Image: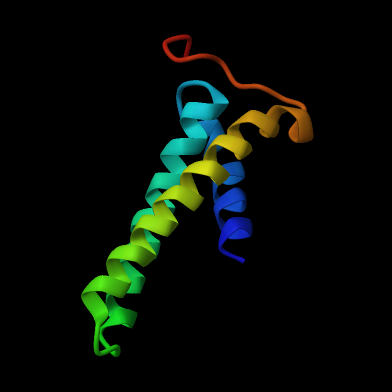
Length: 90
């Protein structure tokens, strides 16, 4: 569900973002990772060993969001079929 939300947000924000699809995808996925980390911090307050679990949760999410962002950037043009101008051409 998180991945679907990230991809949907990327699709809506893509016309306003500069740079290649890969760069724009990583920008959006980084923003969504920050939102995930913030919500996780609030949620982790209910556990007894929150610091260790939170650190591993965030490290795992950073890896997963990066892989998903790179995949989304690489496959976006294939599925959507349109590209946007490169940075500096607007």
